[in-house]
Image (cartoon, rainbow, N blue to C red; front, side, top):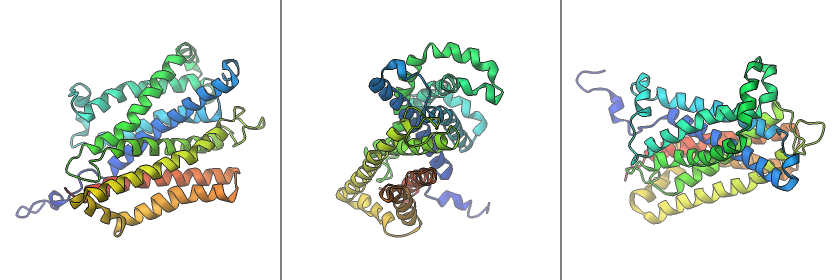
Length: 324
């Protein structure tokens, strides 16, 4: 550091960097994958009857695996972004219920262990293959509480998915971030990322295919049903983005000036190429082309994940570039 002029980082207007963007992405991915997996299981139980819905679909297995891993990776990003990362435990014992972050910490403290418990229940038959057969007894015991686990996790997934948006919308100095649309946008984009990740793992790891054929590992057809949800979810993402930009325009002043992030510079490229062209365009092209094979599903899923990650970076960085 220059003793006269100081560290140039003090003039950097960006408070939260890419590590936080990755955390926001991972938290949304974890919550979205479980919302899709559990929601589809409940829906299948309604249309087939409870007696026929006990098998674990490839989508649910993927969701059960993704949820704990994604949220733990996200929490690691959050911890190491702290000024004193090894003092992170202090936020676990000091609460301020008027703070969005404290409420989020409470939700995560309940959510994270429950994702591991649910993974044991859903992946019980896979445990011996991974050398974890000694956990089968615990999985059987937890299986008796499956209904309660799913209900609690579904509710907590909604909270965690929306919390990521509430967390940055509390930054009052930034007009693009300080908007009520962000929690809804982040929840829906988390659903999009979760569905994409579920599809990717269901196809690559658990032998699922779009039609749930008997030759595949997904006899339930959950992958096909999830595929049907993806277009409405994408439409909701577009709607919330339109609402966000429209609100900024009509608010005027510094808020309207923030729309310049769409017309030039690095973050305009991230939005139009990463979010729109790749995140929305590629999956739509896959649908319009009529391709439903394994490679098309993997391509569309990867494009959706890139799009949501690009969206998190765009919102965080472009949002912090314009002050009220």
